[in-house]
Amino acid sequence: MADSSGSAKTAETRGRSIRPKGRRRKGPTRRRRVATITVCALVSVVLLGGAGLGYVYFKLNGNLKGVDINAALGHDRPKNVDDGSMDILVMGSDSRAGKNNEYGRDEGAARSDTAMIVHVYKGRKKASVVSVPRDTMIKRPDCSKDGKDVPGANRAMFNTAFEVGGPACAVKTVESISGIRMDHFVEVDFTGFKKLIDALGGVEITTSKAIDDNSSHLHLKPGTHTLDGEHALGLVRTRHGVPGGDGSDLGRIQLQQTFIKALLKQVKNVGLLTNPTKLYDIADTATKAITTDTDLNSVSELTGLAKSLGNIGAENIDMVTMPVTYDPQDPDRVLPLTKQSRQVWDALRQDQEIPKSAIKGSAGDKGGTDNYVK
Image (cartoon, rainbow, N blue to C red; front, side):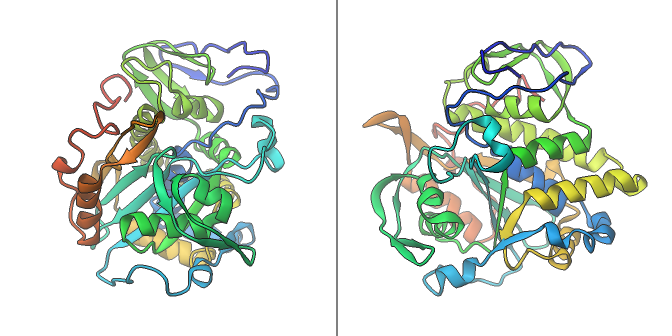
């Protein structure tokens, strides 16, 4: 990663682990978005990592923070269908409070990075993940925050919902878009992502082509790399240095989805049950970094959920981006493809797999990156 003068540390290459040396200087003051992969990391470790974490959770209850989504939203929500499936909204926060201020000065309330709706199918053997691009222009519903009304907007960026109304408004916005009631909410930040990757011992990826991006300060030669927290963050933030990418958040989402698969494999192979110290470190890191709805912010609830989701592996997760097209009014924004998005939400609502036709022609799923990053 680079210091504030813009110089970059090169990730030297084949088969070598990347471990930055020395103290990292403060980065540029421009806002840097939280990587979506952060929340997937916590889902994979806290939720999909298996029941082995349960025996240490009683020590970690004090780390957890909760938001009462149900009380905030009341009855103005989609029907709660009890069919054995589950929907979880997971998202990042780009607040610069506390240790996150090394990524730039806070210019206002925190915004969300690309959100993901995680649909766990009945039987808890497989899941679908739908990424919602942060720059999607949507109709934001009326919300409230700290007892004050927050008026909606007919044309607003998706990520402003979290900024103006916090987690409850983000959930309400997702529910208004999808028509699906969110059973749970999970939020993580930059610092939590980096510490989690480091606690796992890094994540291994293989690149068939070089990645050079001065904006994210990431430089990888072709080969196999074990990325630590700093460099993993650079990878999932990169937009401009990826061959074949369009330099947008859409390309970054595809790269993040590829990285998630590598992360899930790492979690399954890390040997937590045979290493109590690593187990505790990961659980401590995860619970400190996470904010959930109040139905999940206890060790007993998280343990129960972990047990029920422990059989879901990378090969059982389908990842797509909400079908979108570039906004003719602003090429830096995207609009939902109404008919195709309806196919996605209808499938999840009916606990069915997302049809391939739903993402055909979408700007969000036009090739992927797994042909050169694995």
